[in-house]
Length: 96
Length: 252
Image (cartoon, rainbow over the protein chains, first blue to last red):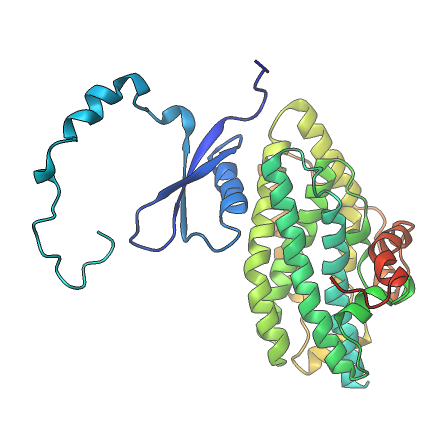
């Protein structure tokens, strides 16, 4: 494996419109938070994708392990009652 | 003084600065120190070319001889270019590129801020739009200077070297002649003397945050605004204009 001599990695989350959730867009290398913001702006918002950016050190993200996927996610397979499909959506409620 | 002629000259000066600096930055496309920075520098170059296209198109309209942006960009000889010498200086190492960018972008920021109040509606709208781009250019280059200056021993040394090299070129940005005076009187042009102190103060602040030394004042660059360019300009134009000259009116 090659030695990673790059700057630390940051994950980039972009909010496309006020009120909408931030979505993961990708990652950038940067020496610190301010530079990570700038790099994220230059790399991921060139075509008006966003109105706000979060950057998070990749190290700070705790991810579930693929080995856990059985115990984590399979139990919700057969629980249809957890889906709010029996309700009528109020008019004017967007982004749900 | 003929106002139309003065306004044409004034627009050409603004456009040529953006064009030549934009070209210098474009030379770094695919050669950036890291991928993200490569994109950042290219974005700035594109912003500058966008500004240049807008203002050269307007210059052509003001002149009224049917010249468009391409005629002005590709078919003028070196001595008709009005860019300041700072913009044509070679990229050197990254510290030099950032020093050049910061000296120019901080100027550009104050300049556009004032120009957005111009009595010429086109210039005012153009400046308001360009100001937003420029604020980012200023932030980008300042943050780099602070990090490199206040970084390792080697980065500090190189940043200082780049700053020293570019320092004396900034004076030309503030030169004034009869064209400026005439248009300032009409409320069209910017009186750059108004913000010289603020400009210098901001440079000092960035330099001090970067733990760098303010370079000594020596000679003052001059000449670009009357078409007396440094040895680099001919090479830049040879590259920049070669396609349009070899294949006039070439289309995509």
